[in-house]
Amino acid sequence: MKSPQSIMTRRRLLQAVTAGSILGPVCTQGAAPDAAAPSATGSLRAGFAIDEVRVRLYSPQVTQPVKVVMLADTHLFRDDERGAPFREYSGRMAKAYNQTRHFRTLQPTQPEACFEETLQTAQKEHAAALFLVGDIVSFPSEAAIEWVQSRLTPLSIPWRYTAGNHDWHYEGLPGTSAELRKEWSEKRLRPLHQGHDPLMSVLDVGGVRVVMLDNSTYEIQPEQLAFFKAQVATGKPLVLMVHIPLYAPGRPVGFGCGHPAWGAKVDKGFTIERRPPWRQEGHTAVTLEFHREVFAAPNLLGVFAGHTHKATLDVLNGIPQVVAGANATGAHLVIEVLPPPTV
Image (tube, rainbow, N blue to C red; front, side, top):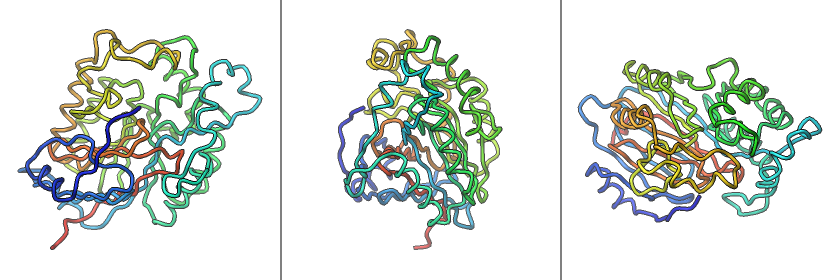
């Protein structure tokens, strides 16, 4: 998915955020903006800074540094004879990311090598947890999911997973997106969920609650909205992770969770992805309410997503939304939550 990219200088970014404005495309891989949004009354936010893949979130309620690693869009394509009955539905995505270029070196690489490199980064960074935010596999291949498990099991840190739209999608297989997500989450993705609710979970990391919601159908369910509201009500510092970015003004419809134009009229991908088109009438009231609740939450420090394969930054109501580059190229995020700087 393509969108215009630009790099905003540190000074301009500071001015924009301080003014409380909403930013469009401002950050790509390699850019190093930082920002310090003023804390609203009752807000637990005290600014943020970004340097390539490192994101620092500041909160007065945090007394000890917290560090986690997040990745999305690895698009592993490993398959074996068990996948033979589904080749009609997996063929296109099986060839989509066989070889990539590393996001730093631009040298040829491939998704499995990039995934393992990111796990090594998590260990070297002494991260307190690892978060896998969707499209880890390109289709629900048993071989690929088993390979992921074999790499995650030896980790000495906890990890959590939420699905992306490709994780459960065999292209052309009959059924609605909601039906297929439920079916393949149960049949194949269950090990990655480790017994947690596939639609929503939370992990407390050093007093920071990392909330993961599955919005891989572009929509939010009523129980997910209620779950998010309950996390906000705790008053603790929150970080939200979703596969599909939340709508930000100026962004294309790929930032489609809550996008006012989302719907069948603008769905250009359903033919090639061999799926039903998006809802004719657009987003549900629940999805739109979720978007409002997210960017009104005083204790939400940041939103992190994947899906677009492009590293970007938006700021809505002082809350940064950071989209990670594709882990198929080695991209990832190191997220630190810190006490406010003293100088």
